[in-house]
Image (cartoon, rainbow, N blue to C red; front, side, top):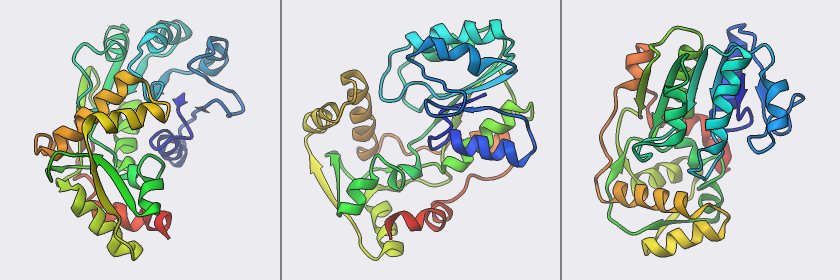
Length: 263
């Protein structure tokens, strides 16, 4: 069972499982067998026959109620391995991670850095196309953005028993880059370098909330970006090579794969 099968990582997890010939069920609100975190009547049909599940929690919220309720339902239905997509910087004691760790079955938590694909698939994409990327002011610190394909590859290894379970896997790209450097690289392949626009952190948080994001999650994202720009989140994690036995994809590989998004 692959939750979030239309998202950045979920659809790549589903594609990789399919390429391996692994029987899987990609689910989303619009899939033939629908799954909606906020409609518990959809959970049973989506879980039928599943022995492992890749979980992408409800987006843009820290509310843990749905994941906490779903995990025991999944175990009761026969799921024996859970892989949860979390994130670097999620607060300690996060209820979604706790629900998976305390599930009583094999589990793994993925804590990736910010996705490279945030620049080419929603989030920053409209701003990149418009020529201005708005960020909370804080400096030009660097961050090891991760290719969503690497997250998917790690998830597939864990779902299929090829990676260590019972662990939190910190995932990152192989090199830290600043936002100005990222935008310059995008400009080199797209022909137009977006302008970086600094705003006060409080104004950035308000912008996210105005766009429909839960206030607590907006504050976490703002704090994460301020930390990155302040040079406090540049460390490279070894989770990708530890699980896959190869280096994480460099940002240049991502640019080559995603260049059509900025055409």
